[in-house]
Length: 378
Image 1 (cartoon, rainbow, N blue to C red):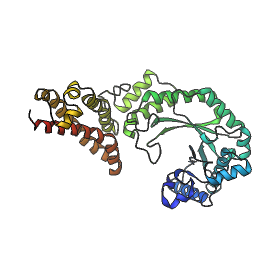
Image 2 (image 1 turned 180 degrees about the vertical axis):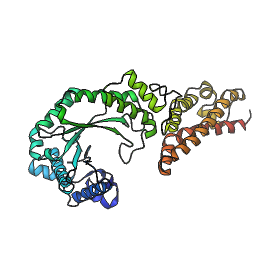
Image 3 (image 1 turned 120 degrees about the vertical axis):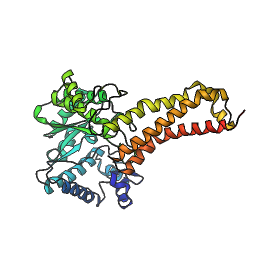
Image 4 (image 1 turned 45 degrees about the horizontal axis):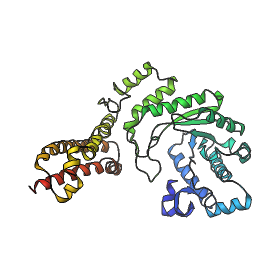
């Protein structure tokens, strides 16, 4: 819960050291959540649904108050969660009539039907089941949906993904991964009562939490958005659907990430530059620094320390280094300019520092050490 990283609200943490979980027993906790809900609804007065979050509450039950309550009453972590969820969703129902709360389901997947039914949560909320794997267990999901139905939940949502689900620092979106994920969800949808499924949320994660780096940027993932949406619309990814997607995007190639075809969609220049960075420049730099026989054999860390290089080997190293430096500088400048047209300067500075600068500085250091060695003739 992002608000808990601020000192003003740190006293509401479930565990003092961890700003990711709200202590539901604190008197000020529910009013804080209610205030946040009010802010969201003020910005979205016509909303028919409101997602109240509530997934991955890792530390719930680990705080002193929770431990004491569980020891004295024998209630479970799931029951603590359900009690808080009922309080939050009841507030939504009473304050914003006609707005249906949605909540992630992962914290109650292990709860039994009796606990779910007796909690009184089912009439108040629509659960959203999430799984972003391309090989998710269809039968397991069908069984989970059946349990929720038996517990009184009237509507269920699924959550797939189009980006952000393959790695915290991933910068290229795997279309096949996300296409496979959405395909599995459609299999689940085909095995449950039709009237039970409210919809599928095609999610795109930008950070894994408020302390992680940025994963794939949206422009890089737009081809994945197009593929996944068309797949969900048609229920298949036929050659005809694929050609439609290519036409929408102005691309001739979707499967080959290293393709030079950048497309004509908004943000396609960012897509093209980041693809060049990840598929061309980074591998070339890694090869130069780690696998190039001349660098490894005649300009090792030892040679750099003593500031010596064979003049004969300079001609094998310097041209590649100079050329790569020029290409890195060009890409750095172009990409930074393109990103600044989309993102605030702080986000651009962060992304460049994490994904471009460390590699560029390695290359720059090699060039500087090479020049220094040249000033020390044998």
